[in-house]
Image (tube, rainbow, N blue to C red):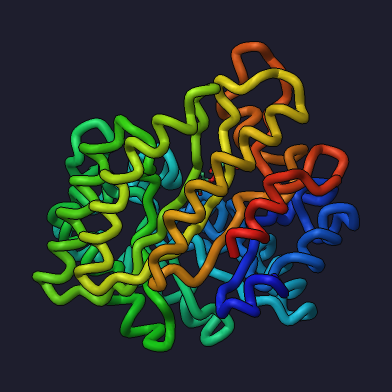
Length: 338
Ligand code: XIL
């Protein structure tokens, strides 16, 4: 983060509240957080599934521990997220909820109550929120539906209400739409859907300030370099369109899926670092980009391992530090790009 701050940028990471995990209670993990990060984000603890065990109930214990540690070390925290527009990532009770005779009204009340309760609790201690996460279906570019959004009268109305409520309650905060349309090929429909959504926000005067580009990158083998240059052009068109509408940019969840690279760890780490560096150099051509957040500092705890194991079963190496907390070439690549 010291490097980042010299260029007016911020660097940060996700962390969890799990003891002995990617958490501040684990001294080996806290060390790179303290040495490198000015900005933190809870990997899961602010999500509805964690905050909302039952209708009407809130459980802030785990997220509050993260806030307390961040406060003690004078680190900023981003809020992730106030609404995840995906059925499988919202609480099971919400999908089965009986919205009653006036579903639009009761769905609005639930959403407003959630956002109001969270934003009021943390006030100015949280200055940036992923208000809405992943509302676009990657394959089609259409908007995702949940029981809540159907009851409320549609996805657009739901997202608009989320942003308007967040803005009313936290007028100081940067409000972000966050999604994973990436620069790799095969993302055209996803990107087009995100652009339509962002245009709609502007047309309807919805207070959205930035696009969060998750940046879960995927290398694809030895020819990655050549193809990366070829598809860089389409990605720039996308970013031009986003920034042309006045949106700022954030890299909110950077990590690298080391697909197709040699199994040898040193070679793999170099491939990952080179790939990320090319990506970051493109991103930093946009002065609208201020914050870069890694989705975890250490390979040992990365979600990529369990979520998408390598076919050859070799341990994934997606993060700036390896499983034994040693800095990797990816760390250098990020520091140099900043
Ligand atoms: C992931 C976490 O890393 C996992 O621990 C959890 O099981 C699922 O969610 N996009 C997001 C993040 O916005 O919240 C996701 O985090 C990764 C993809």
